[in-house]
Image 1 (cartoon, rainbow, N blue to C red):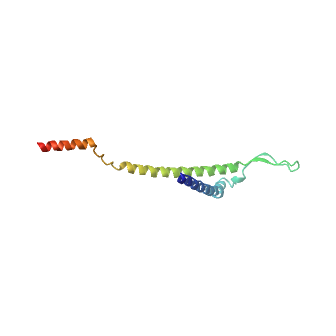
Image 2 (image 1 turned 120 degrees about the vertical axis):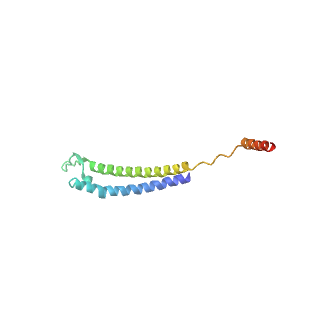
Image 3 (image 1 turned 135 degrees about the vertical axis):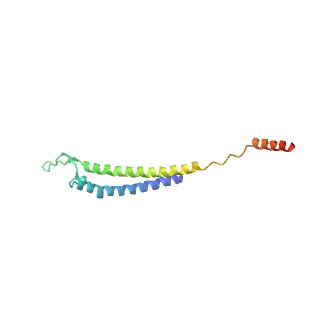
Length: 129
């Protein structure tokens, strides 16, 4: 059980680090390229303003930052695809190993005590003739 807990802890740590790498990839490389292709749009600044800010009355702006949601969604899709590819690779390796084990012929079973005894009796009867 200690090995399983340790394996899971290592997986969580590596997963967290991988998540940071993917987040950086999305925020710093992919989304700027998509924004450039889309006419210079910065996705982190995209938002839907529900209520404008009014400095005279002290009302702050109310907005939904959907650009950050788009970035997070792309981030999730990359992580999900990476995990899918990794699990598929592990299953292929596991299936290949199982096929190799199944391909090995099983040794013939040893004769039972009754068969050995009957064989001895048969041989003794042959000697008497």
